[in-house]
Structures are given as C-alpha cells and as structure tokens.
Image 1 (cartoon, rainbow, N blue to C red):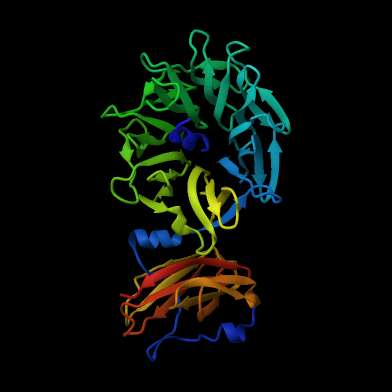
Image 2 (image 1 turned 60 degrees about the vertical axis):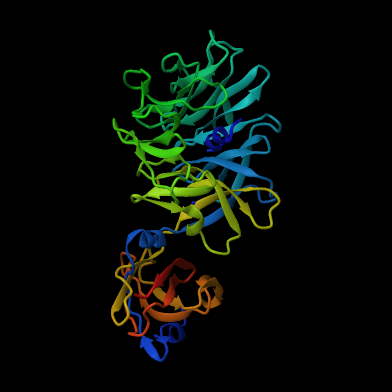
Length: 459
C-alpha cells in the first residue's frame, strides 16, 4: 500500500480578589503599564494566536498501543482501528468493534451513530455498517466478490468500492439507505475507481485511475440524487490526483500533482497555501464550514481556514509532549483527529484536537506609549476574569487558588474584572513608552479555565 493510500485511508468566579485583583503593574525599567483590556496584532499571526486547541489522547486507558482515528462526527464520537479491530471513543470511553483478529477497519461514522468500514472475510474484504452493537454486511454483485466502505452520510448512504463481475478490479460504488448497490464506474478506459466521500446532499467524490494499487488518477464527482453520471472535476492541466472529501455545499477537497486543492462548485481547482514554498501537500477532509485539514510536506499536519494555512503543531500547548504526524478528519465544530507521537509512549497515539472556546484575542496593535486593547471571549458570565502576562516566556505555572496551570512562566496579574452576560470582557492596557521591541506573553484565566496564550512584540 502506498504512503498516500495509507494517508487517505487512515483518514482537536470567586477568588481571593484582594491579591489577584490588586492591579499590580507591568514594569519595564521603572515604567508602569496598568492593563485594562483589548486586542493586539493583525494578519495571519493574530489569527493563529486566536486558533488554539486542547489535545486529548484517544485510546484505551490500560494500554499505550496505537489507536488510529479515521473519523469524527458532530457529536464528538471518534472511530478508527486498534490492534486489527475497529473502535469507537467518546469522552474517554473506548470500545472495540468486531471480534479480535477480524481485520475490522472502521472508516467513518455519521451523526446518527452509524459506523461503516470493512473487514477481512474468507472470500475477501466485506463492507459493513454497524449500529447499536450489530453488524450489517453490505451486498455485492456476487457473494464471492469483495467490497470496502469508506464513507457514510447522515441518511445512511454509503460509498466505497466493490469488485465487478467482468473485471478483477474494484470500482467506486454506492449503497442506498436500504442497501441497494450501484456501481459508479470509471472515467473512460480506466480500470479502477474509488469513492472516498459523500455529502448529506448525496454528492459523491472519488478518483478514477489506471492502477489498482495507487488510488490516484482523475478526480470525479457523482450525484446519487441527480444524473448518476461520473463527471471529471475541473482539471486544466490534466494532473493526476484524488478527491478526498466533499461538504454540504459541494466544495471538494483533495490534491493534484501533490498539491492540496479545493474545488468550488463547478469551478477550477484552487491551490491551497503551504507552510513553505514548493511543499507537497494533500487535503484529506473538509467540513461544512469550508475548513479543510491535511498535510503540508506530507509530515506537517495543517488546517486551511480563514484564507490561510496553520500548522497544527504550533496551536497546541507547549510542553504537551505531543508531536503531531498526521490528521485524518475534521467535524463541523472544528474538532480534528489524527495520529502523533506522545512522549513516554512506546507506540504512536491517536489524538483529538478540540478548539479552545475560551479565547484571548488582540483588538489593537501593542505600541509603545499607547493603550493596547484585548478581548476575552467565551468567559463564564459574571465570573471574575484575570489577564496575566509574562516577559519571560512560556512554561507551566500552577495557580492552585484558581485550580489552573498557566502556560507562561513568572506570570504577573495585569487586571481583573467580571465577564458580562454574553461572556465577553474588553480590557485596555497603557503601554510604557520605553517598551518598544519587547516581547510579552499574555493569557486570560478564570476558575478552572485558561485561555490561549498571545505572543506579542511591542511596536
């Protein structure tokens, strides 16, 4: 199996106010800066500062053997495979699917909780759906012909591949909610095809090619509710590639000639930016908000959002012990699953990245001699908020009184104030005139919660 095929198939109150609300100043060489709230910075750096994730290991509590997530639904249920069986995970609860040694490969889960994938059988691979503890095997054109299921939508329409009677190869296939099989077929004289994604509107995407071993060729679209004709996606340079995912608006993600692209509806492919020039890249999943995930340079997991590319490794807490290696899916809440290395573990581990809803954002530049503005969003209404800063950098600092650990070292309190009824706090900070060029780290906190950190340089 090629690296790219593997990449696709394995496809986020009340405290002691006397001390903490004292308004201790931020000092630079004898100058004082009293913080009172706002937002600094602009452009990609400021956006990246507002994008932060908590990271959670996915796997059984009693083993550090690899659990590889392939998909996550909008209820936070993660599925994948573990030690040759499938698994489902949610909020720390891990359950295997399929008998030991069955070769069960779970590929996708919908928002109804129906899981799909394939397992090894005596006559080849068998496609299945799983619901409430029961497997249902999807039909093939003949009982001895293999099939694999790769994706399912919320209407229980399934797509994947099935071997046809007149050929030794598998071709893209569609199973209706009642299990009827339709072979999607190929483009032109191609021998093989694969269906990798289906939207809730019944739009299917995949790839038609000439090799049964490498799922690359001409990306295509097929409408289960429409003409049911295989249509090649726009490809002005006739590049080889793959369509990997599709969302509710029929935006398609994938790659052409090792470059990640998005196909807008009916349009030419739009190249996605990479972390460095000339990186190879691939987009493996797209959500209904138009956010896509994949790899830049095939080894650096990234998020494409807000017209930019963001390296996910830089958006998790420093000192977490994680090295992110691959992402496989993103849901409509922006939660991302993938595989990485965790310090102290003997094997690679599955992870979940969950966007931090408690955000500290800059609202103006930080300029010497002028007020800087910050805003805290997602705070608990009416609960005291604390804006802290450090000129020493990142590191772990426990604050027992708040039941938190800050992500900055030698923190100092800038200012405190209660959150409004909508969970926001706006603060303004006078910046000392002699602070130009200094780098400062900010973080917000309330009881039991900390925000992202901001790394800002005073202009």
